[in-house]
Image: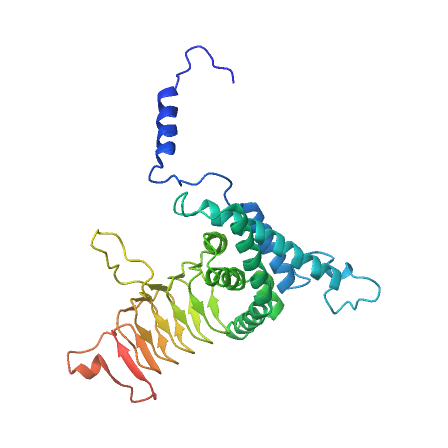
Length: 328
């Protein structure tokens, strides 16, 4: 490096950063070594997309088989190669992540232990791929049937942010359940940065889930979403408060996000906070704020301009529909 005359020197600043790293500063891990690779995890998700949706994300995919392979079936050799690549990347990245993100040196597993855990976890993840594939098929169906603008299921696979985000989430959630550190969050944030849909990998989501439009949706870690639910853009399933321990630190891991039972629809801009339950079949209108349980088959909507009168104007049984209507 060439230092020009008059160029300021920053040795003291450099020394301050070095000293903070040595001390294990607030934002500096105590671990040394390689961190998980964003580029490798992107390759992982690309390989998984090719596996889940053959023919969409790899040009010539169906031409990689031998003469005996039918064009209507994914080629065996390429499919096996994809599984090998997925296993290799995951094993390597899990092993790196387990060691690097240990709490301290004493907590870090030996390289042999990390490698053994990584290989066993990657193998179990591979065994769960058919389940993930089935769930994604249901998500594609929900997107096609839930959007009148969708011309085909293929269009939703190729274009829709919901399918992109749910592919990442279904993968990240299984890795989260397998106690893989950090990598599930990286995979979720890949989808977040591309689609604007922020789903924590801890979120449990049932079958045939669809987020229409998607931008600005936030779903917290301990949220539970049943089957055949539908969200619109700008929906938040968040926590209402964060209990603290005696030292003033947040108590983590407690259930603190909403439960949506089967068949719930939540329209744009709605905010649902805390460990509340939205009953099956309910409809949550746009821009409402909910911090209490909602019974099944309810409709929650914005307050209308009404004349002063009885409480029936605000809460009561609908005269025209067999649902409970909450006007807030």
